[in-house]
Structure formats: C-alpha cells, structure tokens
Amino acid sequence: MVTLAFVAKMRERIRIEDDVFDSELRDLVEAAREELCLAGISRVRANDEQDALVTAAIVTYLKAEFGLDIKESQAYRDAFEMKRRKLALSSKYLEKKRGGG
Image 1 (cartoon, rainbow, N blue to C red):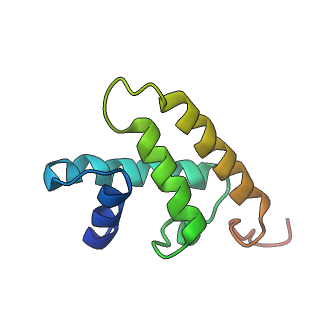
Image 2 (cartoon, rainbow, N blue to C red; image 1 turned 90 degrees about the vertical axis):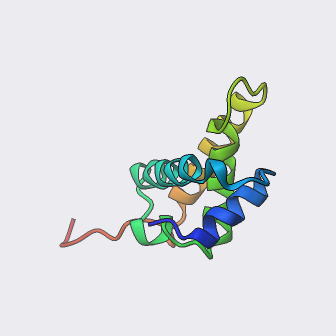
C-alpha cells in the first residue's frame, strides 16, 4: 500500500502541485515496487517509504513513466534500471532465501 504521505512526497519530487493525478501516481509507485521485486529486491525493502535508495529508484521510475511524450523518458528508464541493478547487488536489499538453497 502506498501511503498518502508518500504520494505527496512523489508529487513534490516530480514537481506536480495538484493532487488530481494521485491515483495514477499511486499505480506507478506500485508498478515501480513490483519492478524492484522482479529484480530480487525483498518486498519489505521495496515498500520501505523511508529508504532513500528505494525512494530514488521510484522517483526515477515515475519520471520515466508519468505523463506523455517526455523527451527524457528513455534516459530515466535507463537510470531506473541502473538503480534497480545496484539495489539487487546489495545483500541488504535482497529477498532472503528459505531453506538451504
């Protein structure tokens, strides 16, 4: 779940003043979190709204995916992918394996 405070923070980070797009922002935050989980990031970490690195990755995802016809979208997509890979390289962020393997 994305808190209202986090949506407001994301709105500020992507320089939107009106809350009319909050539903779309919430959906994009959830999508960004799922993308992080697909890379092996633990769901707990991906949902941590206080983690600066996760927040930076989510902001980058929003800048890539929010709005229409943004010239920098591909650059932001590439930046998100780089941040996602860096997080996936850190044992601090990885999903813990169960059992012995």
